[in-house]
Length: 275
Figure 1: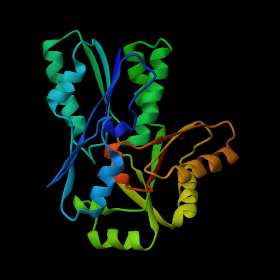
Figure 2 (figure 1 turned 90 degrees about the vertical axis):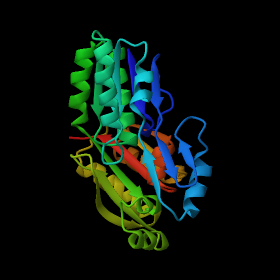
Figure 3 (figure 1 turned 30 degrees about the vertical axis):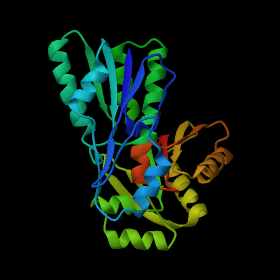
């Protein structure tokens, strides 16, 4: 059984014998950054912080997905929301092509409607189902139901890269950075990034994230926190949650390249099991 994710999942490894990730790529008109294990994320962030031109991302090609399928007969794929990348469409096209040549192969392409921390949440749960002995079909059914009960929330202190690729207004992005204000938001039910509010400073942004988690119906289950060079806020968020839910399963991961590009420095994301 092979588990595959695109590199927006923020994991390099999973405690599973056959796990792999397929990299996305971040581009400017001058340089490109492939989101592999060898990517120097600090170098990428330093460069992008001073870059004034256009930047954008590119999803894995159909051929890249096909290569990742090779040799497996049961495959689960987890991809980022189409609001940020065409990865799901590329993976689905590859799955259809692969099954034409390998009609006995089972492939499930799971559209996370999200990114980063929520993909980690899904991958960990999928691994649990499979390690527990669930069949391909049962695990597929269960993980799709689990997805309906998970949420993602974010706090970003910079929207520079989002403004450089045309997703937000440049003037608004510049003002946000100068005023030390974090934009808080969520991945909505359509997989789109939705802003829910603003918070001034790190402390208030942590409280804002925990408030969103509470509103989502979190009751102390598993939650994944990811960050970009902001382990302090990630740990503070973890401790705030543990005060109320001392038995919560909380895990912190640094973001990989693709999510670091969108979150930027000081960005924090949390995905949780919800009502």
